[in-house]
Figure 1 (cartoon, one colour):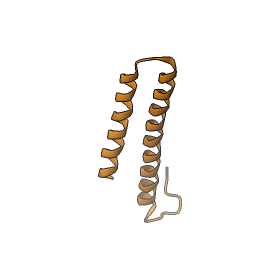
Figure 2 (cartoon, rainbow, N blue to C red):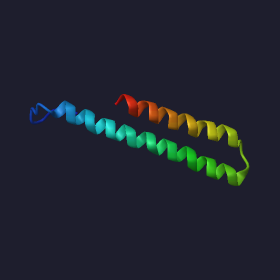
Figure 3 (cartoon, rainbow, N blue to C red):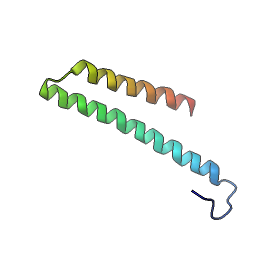
Amino acid sequence: MSNPNNNKNFNEEALRINRALKKENDALKVKIAELKLLEHDRHNSDEEELRKESAELRDYTTLRSEYE
């Protein structure tokens, strides 16, 4: 992405938007893991693995938000 108007705050704004999108993406990954878990419950798959994946994504999202 270029800075078409030579805006001094362009990089800061781009970083703010990028962080917001990453947080949204991380939240969606957690939601997907939770939905997989629900689907798994209906089909008797490996529940423990899906729970672990969901917990890891939540931990990752929490840890990452503390550093931003």
